Image (cartoon, rainbow, N blue to C red; front, side):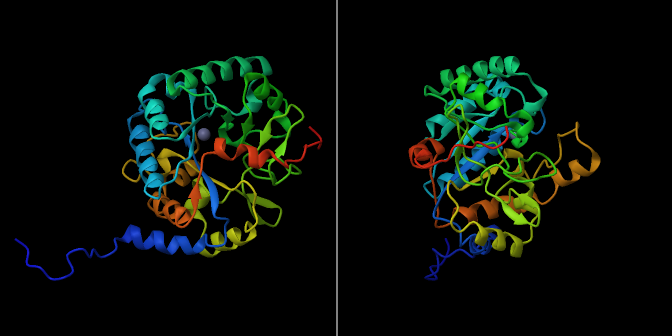
Length: 302
Ligand SMILES: [Zn+2]
């Protein structure tokens, strides 16, 4: 039996806890309300197991602070793992759609996209028992080239999207799109990605590889730029926090891309924890009325 020392309740902070405390300071300037979002897709399409484990880890991380988030689930994954969709819904998170397949919007046609979205939405609604109102384009691929997709999303029954990088970006971006929530002509509400500004570049710094790779001083600078951001949200993937099996998938990507996808995963969870520190995450569906209230119509060149 351990002798009483008077310090039995004390536990030295782990490295992860210290890292999260440090990370919280980087995000101190951001608004108090955000939506923690997850793009639920497997890293290795042949093996969903790690995706399920890491999605649970992200739910634990989020719920530790009492928050709930929005989970954009890939349709083909939902078909293979209905239990995961049911668990996400049962734990009080919003189930939303990340497309049927993980394909950039510009590679589809309006007719095929409508058919795929209808199938994915119906599946997610059957499994969650709730209407599915939100959509996130794979790879943030809602751009000027795929602007036709906004009307398709409305036709499929979606009320909102969070799919636009409103700046030039080496992957997908839409320079000239509003940086605050806006409406497309179809009525679809778009809640664009919060960006850090670096010259002509806009970097979606609150997620993915950006959150893992940007140095602390840059994250602090970008957070200050977003002090008055409307509709703040973060994003991540289950594999972002998978430190044990980093890099098992992405065989379709080049060597450099695979290296970037593999490294720095140990900083993702502490930084996400730090981002949630003192900040309340609510699912998009609970913020929609407020975000839509004064969203301007985007009449830019479509
Ligand atoms: Zn994705």
